[in-house]
Image (cartoon, rainbow, N blue to C red; front, side, top):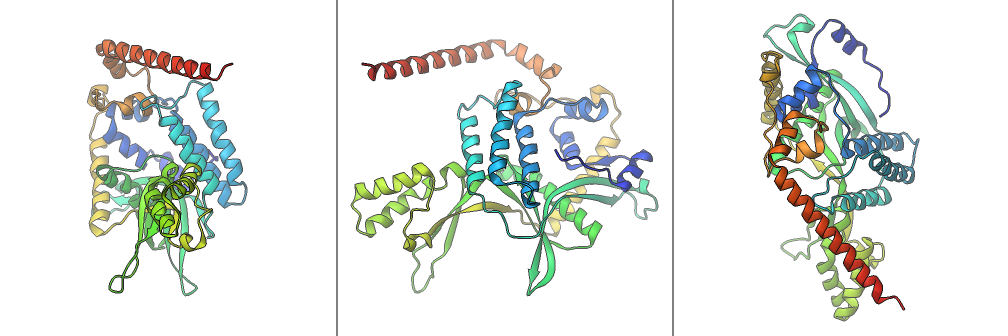
Length: 390
């Protein structure tokens, strides 16, 4: 990650012993309190997981791209080198489902090959300090809750040539969010908005994520005299962007006079290449792929909820005595163990080791099944290869 210089005000707060929070620190409290205890009370660093390692490199490279210091081609090379370096260190993708790694790489390589760099001014990695009063009439720094943040990118909005407001964008190499996750994930953007507006006085009119692994598969509806054509967009993994449009495209080619097999073969090639560049001009205006900026809509209620969430979380943290017994772990179950196994970065966690010991027979069975599956795959490959031997 690009080295950051410590902000003078932030240093002043540290020198005074005033707590400074971040979105990740606040989220950690709600995720796994034992992990919070390890990270923020004992200051024990967790081990990197492959997603954090990749995300750091990609964020740095995007910043360099928008500063004209690097190309997408070089960023793609760095991305793939990072994966190799991680795996050489034993930092691997989750094995379940087995397609996790290949799909992740397909989606990200498509991003580097096809992303359209925005033609706009952009402020990257903007440091912001946000403060919320603890009391009705605050006087000193101690009377505030302080939240620090680094905003990925800020872009201007102009109307009739005049500056009006800004857009806040957060780069995401992760998977899309469920409806249940949206409010939690959106709080980070709202904190950015509140912080930027408070610190600069500049209005933030839009916030959202650039979801690097996703695209919008776009098409225009037929329309009628009463109902003009509309543009429809569907959020898809990059590897499936053209695949989503396949049926509609086959129908279009048949209408143009192709027979069914010819239409299927023509469109099948586009799907296989995940590329619409060979579409005839009359269809290029009806079908296309767009990079995914996922806007997070907000209103006054959402802004208020975010401030209350910060205040309530900080109150809980500061009212909790720093005894390990007050920091219970996230509950690990057979249906909910992804964080502990893949993201936490604490393989020696006593609670994780206890869970593994209590479920040793289950893991042995899974390992045996995996070994059998691998043997079957190898045998099938060998049998197929033998068909082509003279």
